[in-house]
Length: 126
Image (cartoon, rainbow, N blue to C red):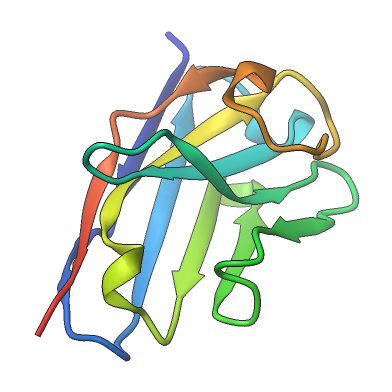
């Protein structure tokens, strides 16, 4: 059974860091690009980052560029999102998703992804 499971969310103070993990089972994740999305209450789901399969080329939304780093460990079938210098506006449920493509296709629309995790809550607050 194809499954993605996110972990690593939590409550952190502004300026702090979190590392999200996206573990895949039932399929080989390194055949596909993987995206990270987030959705805050009352807002649409937005693309945050994407990492390609073979070349691992990353993409970042302007709102997180320079603060977030996406990486993948194909041996562990896992993708990570390192989030540093977190801001209150980063508060959202974060989702990872498997792309239908091997490379990141922009714009990073949710319609390009066909398998989603359940999400993990990230709250940035003092």
